[in-house]
Length: 264
Image (cartoon, rainbow, N blue to C red):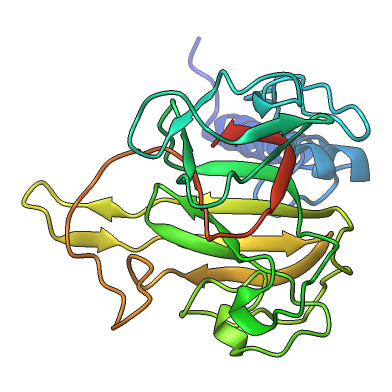
């Protein structure tokens, strides 16, 4: 039987009204994920939680090398090192430290490195012997055999500031002088980012370094301007890859111990 038109109109009106009410109810029950309205605080916090990747576990004993570090010298032997021109290192191993054998050359690691976190401890001779300036306890830590963090007795010892202890030699003066007296062990913690070169050999990104001297920040992510030079300006005159760490013989009986590195 055909229904009256006014009854159809009423049914239609009721249907539309019911649908609108249901949509309104659904909107009230469903949180607005864009604005965060109606979410509990913990639900809003969850939106910015990132659960992957999970960092790997590293043991970090007090006063020791992290479990993922490469120990380069623990005081027992020089097996990780060689002479600056190859062959057995000539440095003196005594009392869990290695000391420069004066005028017999520096030493370098057998392994090559690029980006690293480097820790080492060093000591200049206690007996000053009347020397001053660059002649007091001079050595150096060379990153990739090219870029020097200066080692020097800079305790009450006047010299040019871009050549004192913890300087990036002839490039960056340390922010402060954190030197300890001669004969006392000191530490460097170095964060190093190696330079990058294009396939054709031109420099794309320079090297950067951060240095903590005895726990004090003395170089804060400074740009290395090129290879360390005693005379003339530094430059990136050649492209290169990873290379050994090098410790300098500058005719002073400087000692080193507790050397480890983490590849970054």
